[in-house]
Image (tube, rainbow, N blue to C red; front, side, top):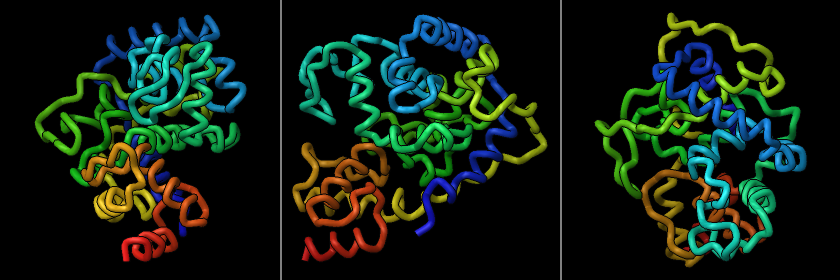
Length: 275
């Protein structure tokens, strides 16, 4: 099976090449705020230990919790208490750093490896973290692209409910991360980004490759029937971190490689378990 990142790498590179910021003052404001945290060393220990770029930690945590360091990156619960939201039962932790290390390890971001982080990989890991459901609606996810010309409208306004007219008011991680990399070249993932090429048309979002989005609603429904997920998954066809965690739990129970991807072996094992 082809690695899912390789299936989407070209699309990400095309979007990165043509990206222009459309909410510059907002992007600059947030980037400067996050750069202050970089200067304070708030992300450094996590970044060094797990080999995850500081700009990925900073922008994803801003997106998830508005950089509230009282909260865990795992689910936004207070890190000084046992988490009640999925992933539940984590903690309490002695500090934010410990909670972040636990959270990013759960999401396997420590497995990427420092040498493999490029801007395209930044996009892939961010979309995998948030979910690939936007692709079924022909929208490039605002989690990455809000605040740029690669996103106009469309948002999940609640679990499983997509609104084509709703506009995501948060900034995407990519415009902010790019601004941070321009402020500090040591944060850049691949040298100085090329100037935007607006002549390149916006690529149509590719369907999520097998193991990410193919038959996701069936997978979610099946895992719920098997009692794998607690609480049960929302059957919305949006494969994100919770669905991936449930798939891994099933794979471990079935005695097959636990990578969170739904390939032929996992499909066969689910069908056998249902039968």
